[in-house]
Image 1 (cartoon, rainbow, N blue to C red):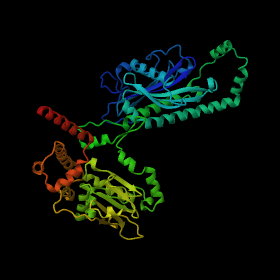
Image 2: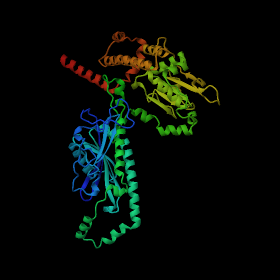
Image 3: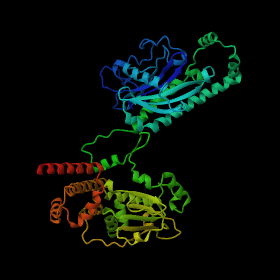
Length: 560
């Protein structure tokens, strides 16, 4: 993670001060670095080095007195972490070829300026209510900062506590915000450990002498001159003294190093080899931004609003009659692929279920086995574009088809009469073949369909292509996934053309038939094309509609 993590304190003599910071340096493949010839547990083929950062900073990061610049002479013990003999700590990740360096100040002057400014702001103006807790501030010029302020008990400080902050400074605003929960969670763990140690020291000092009472008794005799002399004679206490831990800075170095490494591994960039497809646009549109400005990745509002929370589902598994409450997800009997679903259902039943799926009819699955019910819905998704998939995996009541086209419910849930009599719905009951008998595999289940709809004589072409590939055992699972993906992409391109055509003005039936012929589609493909049109991204629809409006305005001007 390209960031700098620093712990800062508000020194009573010098104000906000950078106390200790950690940053990562990546390998730049310079030849003048010194290779490490013998390192324990070294892996073959990996060139190990003692330093992976730029050679400009190799001397500054050294641990000896001669290789490091002198510390400032005006620093007190309270705002000093390193000494002239111990300049910092370094940890090397040889696999990633990264050096993590901890020192009192950042090695690069520009980084020092950014960290110094963030330190001052975190301990002065940029403070959350209560003066303890996380807060975000910054800009593109000075960098973006996540700051977590906290207090440590100090029997010699004003108010018997010292003010500290841990700041994370980086340029990438969105990376920092999307890592908020991860970073705050582990910063709070560090702070909790420091506060526990400081509380023990404070309690021990108070047990020896009640310093609060001593201060209160001396207030009446205190003058401005005596206060200044007394405060001048009291030395600010270092973090080592407050926690009574001589290894507190190595402890912080290990924590900060781990956060930088783990933070980089959590979120990674993915190189797109071509223009984003409709599924990618749908994922971006389904991202929900919270009031705080955070992004909930791949969370559609429709699913969040209509489907129960994880806690509700867990509670249902614990309290209801669902059989999977006694099974962990790893032990539950579930479908593992679309091909397995085809093999268990058989050709005719699978064709019926797949047809209702691709034309947008509501699939209602009734079962006491939640994990099995969810696996059926999950693998039917392989037949649809992402924008056409709107599931509710479990509900205690019936949900209308405009909310979801896949619905999982218990067998005793009442379904309205207009739904059971409609040809736009199909009910799938999944029950054990034998009552009061444990189920161990999918063959122990009986799957029954209930629908008033009749299937057309000619199947949609896209369904026929998919069914042939699923039934062909020579297709490996990876090849089948690629085939289904490419087939859906090809038909989504036809849907795009048809959508642009329909928004271009009124057209006769003959013109529409000719267009379908050019696209390689027929009359019995219309239902699929019409439903898949609803799965187009808002971005594409907006672009086509804007182009249609502009074209209409241009035609009007030309006539005038």
